[in-house]
Amino acid sequence: MRRSARLLLSLLMLAPVACKHDPKTGANTPGSGDVRGREREAPPPPAMPRPYSLAAKPAFASHVAAPAPALVALGQTLGLGNEPRAVLRELVGAVGLSFEGQLVDDLDLARPWSAALVEGQLVVQVPIERTRLPQVQALLRGKKAVGKFGAVELAREPVEMTPPPPKLAWLDTANATLALASDERGLATARELGHAYGKHGLYLTLDGAEVRKGVPSFPFNRIGLVGEDVTDFRLTADGDGPIAQLSDFTEGALTGLLASPSIVAAASSRYAKYQSVVKDLIGQATRTVDKQNFLVKGVLEDMLKRYNAVLRSWNGRVLVGLGAQRHLLLALGADDPKKASGAVGSLIDSVLGNLDLARTFGVSVPKLRFKRNRSTAAGVSIHVIAVDNARKLLPPELAPLIDAEGALRIAFAGSDHAGAVVVAIGPSANEALGEWLEQTKGATPGSKTTGDLLSAAFAVEGELLSQLRGLESLAPLLGLTPAREPTHAVVTRKGDDFDVHVTGPMPRVVASRGSGAARPPRTAPVRSGP
Image (cartoon, rainbow, N blue to C red; front, side, top):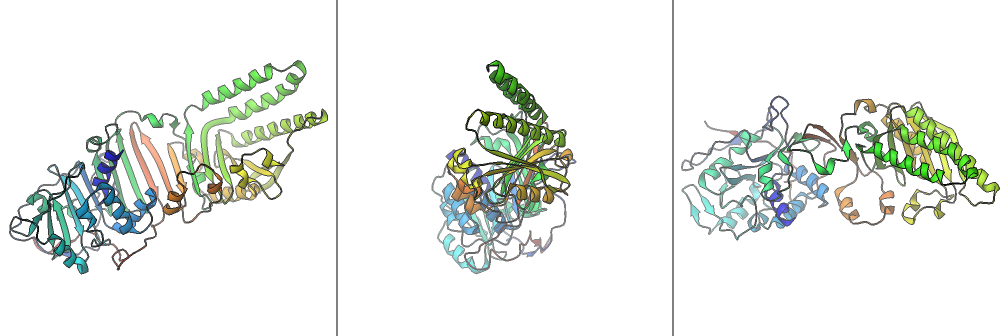
């Protein structure tokens, strides 16, 4: 685990970025498009050697036009907070790079960063805040000179890292940038990275063979990301055979139901083995009924038929999520949602009838109240069932779902638009479900998302995610409310290749020092000479 973390951080710590899958060629290549806001770039020193040629599809290359929000997005994902320098310091510290650790306060977080594997060496170009150039000059002073243009040897301590960290550094004071590489031509190449790979604000391509040097089981031949910023990018992963961890899932996510600002976190897919689950549940119920005496069996057989009808209406599509505070959300796909909802209502009627019969024999059973057509939302009838004295029936961690009267309320409806029976569980289940239906009535219908393998949405800050790790109870999760606009991710696949489209709000950047993290991002500079 430590080895794999070092590998990934060594490749991505200076460029937590994104890149694009070219639909015409199927390759992860630098995208086309205008690069705006370029700065005039001073020419290289006369004594600098010629740069290496840069491949259109290298083993690794990355570019990020706006490092601050990219670092915050990475920090939120990893639970490292939203202060970009603090995130970077954590990542550099995890890899054990002491020299880069001393640069964290000097790096300009508003100008582009680039990195690539060139001729077997890691080449990096990062901007330095002009006001911090003296500090970087002092850091390099006294180191062994290399070449005739001002480069120095870093004389690093041994570090277990793949690829090895750069051996040389060159501070370009005219352009306020720092180049890192392992030979002089690599340093000369650093200034070319942004021109080659900076056509998009976010770009990354990584050969799976590089990852497998530290993670032998890595299942992809190449991964890439592309986008203009962290609010909208695509991840592509070219596979090399089936992914064992995904064998339980197949296409059919209920993506449209995630388009609700009331969702704290939710995910959807289609369970590939749903038919065997349905068969097993029906078999278990049938065997239970068959074991009863003649009188009880006669009563239960009708309920068994209704139970089987509910199970058979499920087509494997499923969504599970946290809704508004103290509410769970659930959706079960159905080819005919209204018919499936009717089957659920019919089963409840049968259960209620049998409970009443049990009470006549003095049997203590839970008290259920069922209200058909309790309300309507988005043209869909909502039905509500309440279970009284629910605290005696539920584990303590689910207590937040119970209302002030001690009842557990469950609202459900069959939505043709959603392609599912949708369910809300919680103190105000009827209102929560109605709001969910209204908020998603204009979203992509379920019939149009049958090609989505997985989809997810979450609207919580990274700091909170880190605090919730390791929880052994659902209770704290049930108390959450959406903290921001949601981030959405939709996964599709073609054969063994995957595409992940991520959209969301611009991360909130907390600046700890100076103005570097807050300035508008600038992209790759324009050369001033031939």
